Length: 498
Image (tube, rainbow, N blue to C red; front, top):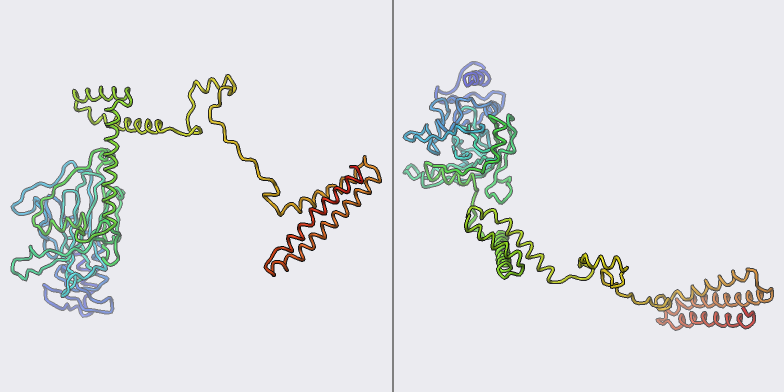
C-alpha cells in the first residue's frame, strides 16, 4: 500500500519534465497548478513537502495492520516514518523489559487512529505547537509521533498513529490527551525534567460504540473534566472501531465489577501526561465558591445521615417500641454469632429508621381531619348512625352572611326599582277589584316616577359634586328614592287595603 501511494504521489506531483528536486533523502515536489505545498512531519518516505490535498489523502487513508501499536510488541521495528516513539510502559517489545501486558481473556478489540487536529493553541512563545498524543485505555498507554511546528497537526498513514487495544471490560473508557513537546533542556540532558505542556483532552466511552462500526469524527478538547469543551483549545479527529469476539460474553461481562488497573510508566513525564489524559488538570490553586458549597452540602448530608443513625439506635435502645427492640436484640445476637450476616442487616436498619420516623409522626399528633379512625369507632358509628359522635370532628359553624345592604349598599336602589316593577306586573293579575287595582297602579306609577326623578337628579349632581370635591349632592339625591318609595307603599296600603 505504501509503495502504491508513493508511486501515485510521484505521478501526480512530479514536474512535467519528470525531474525531481532534492536528493534521495529529502524529496520535495515542485509546486504546479494544484494545491500549495505544505510541510510533512514526520516525513513520508523522505518527502518533507507535498501538496495539501495529497497530504490529506494520506491522512484519510487507513493505517496498515503492520503499523499498529499492540500491547505485547509495542510499535513495529521497521516501516514507521519518523521512527518509533519512546516506550510509555513496560511491554514485551521494550528492551530489557519482559512484562506481558496481553490478556488472553479479552472480550474484544478496540482500534484507535489519531488522524489530525485543528485550532490548537500556541503553547510556546518562540515556536509553534509540537503536538503529540498519549492514549490511555484500561491498563495500557502509548504515545504517537510528534508533529512539529503546526497548530493543525496531521498524522499520515505511515507514522505512529494507530493502536490496537484488547478489551477486558465492556464499560471501559478511552482517554486521549494532546500535549506540546517541550524540549527546553537545550541538549543538557534536562528534557526529562522540563515537562510537556498539556493542550487538551477528550474521552470516549465504549458503551456508546456499536460493534462492527467505524467512527470517524472530530472531538472537542477540554482541560478540566468539570468544565465543558472550549473552542479555544481546538479539536482532534479520531477513527474508532470496536469488535466483540462474542456478544453474549460481552453482555455477561457487565455483571462483573469493574476491574482496577495499575500502569507501570517508564518516565515521570509520561505518567503526568497520562494523568492529564485521564483526569484533566487539577485547579488546586483556584478557589471556587460553587465547589466549596458542593463540598459543604455533602458534609451536611453525611451529618444528617449520622443523626438519623444515632436517633434510630437511641429509639431501639430505649425500648420505645418493645417489639422492635426485642427483634433488634435477637438480630444482634445472631450477628455476633454469624458476622457474615451483617451486610444483610442493613435493610433491617432502614426499616427501623422508617418505623422510628412513623412513630414520631404519630406521637406528635395529627388533626382530626387527618387522623385515621379505628375499626371500633367505624363499627360503632355504622350501627348507631353517628349517635355516639361522628368519625371526624364536626365542621365549624360558618358565620351568618352580612345583610345585603351592608355588603352591597349601591344595590339597594336597583332592588327597590325591581320590586316596583314586579308589583306593577302583579296588579295585572285577577282577584283584585278594579278600584283597588287602579289605585295601586296609580300609586306605584307615582313611586316609579319619583324613583326615576331621584336617579336623574343623582346622575346630574354626581359629576358636579365630584368636580367640586364633595359628595353631599349625590348622597342627597340618592337619599330621596327610599323615602319616596316608602310613602308610596304606605299610601297603597291605606287606600287599596292590599
